[in-house]
Image 1 (tube, rainbow, N blue to C red):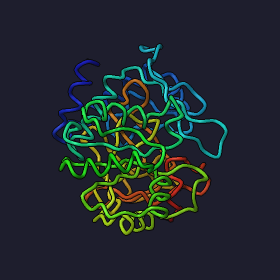
Image 2 (image 1 turned 30 degrees about the horizontal axis):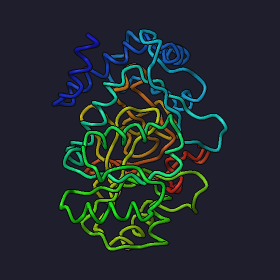
Image 3 (image 1 turned 180 degrees about the vertical axis):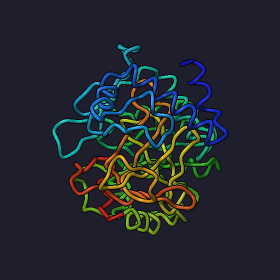
Image 4 (image 1 turned 30 degrees about the vertical axis):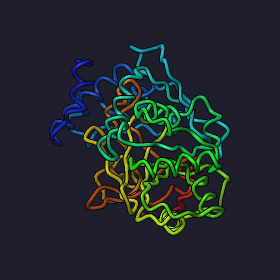
Length: 330
């Protein structure tokens, strides 16, 4: 069933099919992911009585800092990712037992929202991340660049002459050009060397701790739009603890692929989901060898076209990937 599950999640065509696979994932992970089964038991939940997604508990994301969240059937994970850092000395760790499943997930996500990698020149402005061999973001972008087969594509620590030369050559080629950058790097570029590049798509993947004063996403995007003369800024919503991503094609409204769903929990009652705003819970069916049901410390709200990230809980560590988004009440 596990092999069939991995194929089926990428062809989900209805909410009912998603619910069916998610409930199967819950039972599988209760039986095979020790920390998750202990968490479910501690809540006093009888897994045999969990027959709807409303009854499925979400594992607090903090467990990835203190426990090995891994399927007992895959004890030797071939990939190990670490979060970019927080106010805590302990970073999240995510062991990935099936790299092919992870790659299929992020490639299909990218194709769905951005386009086939081979039709795109990707310039990655990711300082600091490049020094970290356990970055899931670097792993993802490396594979997308490899699949693009574009000689102008690559990683850059800053918008130096080589970066700018490749950027201008990419524009001249007429091929779709995407600059993927962490927020602080894009902001530094915008403030020090603004340039009119309306043909280029710019995607921010969040910021890094301690690099700039806090900005709302709207402020960040407005600054970047003015500096680069682009209509809008793309965004990625992903994290070390997940294997799938949400994408915003503008205005900070994120969409998720059919195998990923965002729901909201009541800030005062974490077990109550189905509300229109509050804490963000993520169901990522690609995360079958870890935990598909993750309770994040992000705040958000429903939008007719997807969801919006509003900020962070007051008592949450400032996540490196979200520093440039300030807290707003849901």
